[in-house]
Length: 317
Image (cartoon, rainbow, N blue to C red; front, top):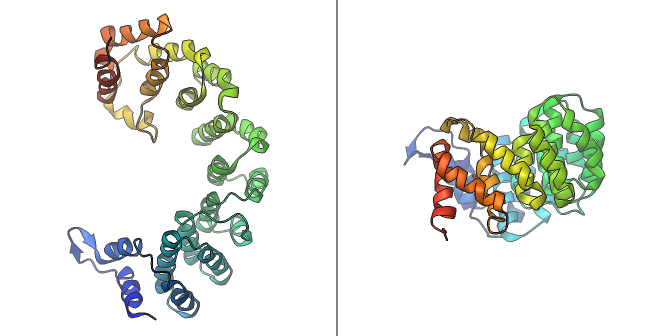
């Protein structure tokens, strides 16, 4: 094989504890591989992966070739790695390939997904769940139907969560009935993800449902996010009620991590963002912001005070 690629594979497989600026040799090599865009390396790596007996070296080469697929827009690499799932026998290697596929470019919808679909039935937890993760990277409509059938037969609560994670990515209206049943699931994360998926499918159509959930205290964080994303002025009173409830007592900064979405907003910030759209036309919204700034400023978390400063104080008048 190409001398450079041999060297790169060797460095990726390096397990020494020698550090350079707190970065291992392997870590530096992985970051280097992520930048590769020389398509001439692809057929060389095909041959290497097919013939190399050392599984750690095959693992490293698989990581490299997925990066090349991403950086050169070559989907055929994905087909090659899917085929490798039929060849590899050890669960850790199968899991590694599926993790690479998950992090790689989108799997084209025309490719045969049977290796991944079959692995969702594996007895090995890591193989099963990494296959579900990898399937999030395709728009093949077969995946939604497969996930719904899995959901019917699965009793493992952890697997149910991973299936719903998959549905969150691929679900259409076809999945609504199954998702609504999951709103009664005992696990909070399953219920919350099902709710978020329903909202992303139904959007503004179910705005009143989101408001009712907020008022009833059901999946409050998910309901607030759905209102922020999709609701109209019909949800104003529900949001005001929830904000009044949240600011009825002091909250500790430690709760921020529990209330923050991936966009960095707390529930209160999402509610204020929603109300801010109507601040010039709805008197109850103006009154709510006045109450927050005049009566409850001390109850705000630091990020929320920054929001007030940025959106209300600086734009006053």
